[in-house]
Image (tube, rainbow over all chains, first blue to last red; front, top):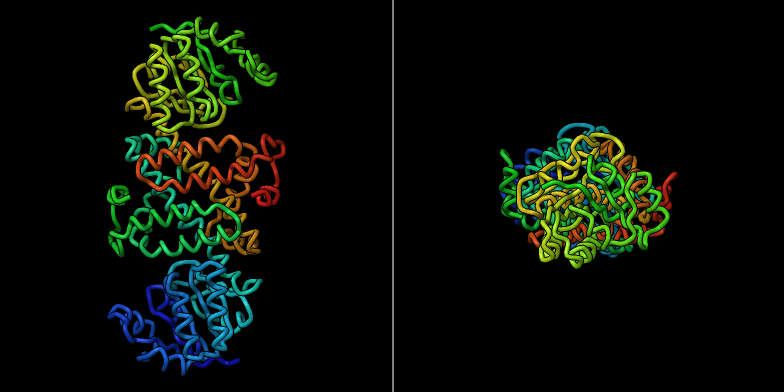
Length: 276
Length: 276
């Protein structure tokens, strides 16, 4: 199977860099209804503008879906509704169950489903971002990124394995950031924040820094972690494990919506704790 | 106020070493209804046996309560019911609200309440275990341990501050151990445990070790963490913060009851994950 044209849905902060990492094939983006920020990211990533989804899907051998978790199924249904019969890669932070629903939706349209998951930051340097891939067609998709700064890795298992890996990975990184922010908020409300920071300095020396990074880095992105925490909670529930860790994390990140995209500089710890 | 005699309720693994750390006053323990293991710990700690609680309380200027969180109020009520009017120190892992109820109970009996919280392992070496103390009388209690291996620290705030500090501290140590065990259990069920361990080895190098320690160290103690997790969840709830992290942790530790006191060697990771 030779891939000549790929459509990237959609060029957000992460997606644009994934599109830019495709090595060889032409990469399209769909401008219909997208913002000026998206256009700028797409141009910087040297993606080719196409106005409508129908036109883009008609020209493409592969679709790369990189979008917020809650939009993953909707994107898949839109593409399936256009009769797309190529390779469909869902690279989103969704549970195995959601990934399987995406696979069923695009399979009905005749496409081959490849399950993907991105671990790491947007692709700006080599060695920092992995795209895990599972299912038939995973090798072909990995080949698209050969020689790029994105490290594409095929893992064993049915489609769903890559998504499951992402869930378990983010369950710690984003889950533990939510936990530590909740703890600092509790300490502040109880009037024992200084005592806790002193105790941590002696016996848990990495925690003061971890809590400060969580406030400045995670708070501005919290609004878009909510859906991911809900997907993780669903993954735990489906496996008969407690869902509360990530339901609580979703609740916490929902409270951080006022900090949406507040970077350079990120919010002060105190501001974040007050908002919780 | 001069303290000549203290009663330690009761000489568990932690309590016996706290009793042994009292420097100067005589330390009693109550043998009525206690196990042979308790007797051995009390003897090793050189505590003085008294048969009944009434006799012990009658002879003592101070009571040190070191017991599982769910028993803290019951112990306080028993002592208050005997008309104890000395210093009552609750050193247990309870919420501020529970500590305040303990304080009210013993206050009605005429005692002065000192809120305490132990952070660290049983006292076997200097520099590893802190007893935080808050409230009127905290200084007098701290003085009991001067020159011992237990580091007694008075912190600012009403009685309840020491308990609040303990809640925030254990919220991370025991909460994050529960979280990482749940994550490894999910990875095992999803068939992505090897992939997760490899990804962690590269990008989160402390997590494989943390998860293994949680399995071997926390699993044998999980049965007695349940009450503490519930006290922590209540503390979050009282402060308007999400309770789910520690409700989930309580749920998880409850599932580890079969490993009660299985140390030397602790259980294998796989056994622990299978039990979750």
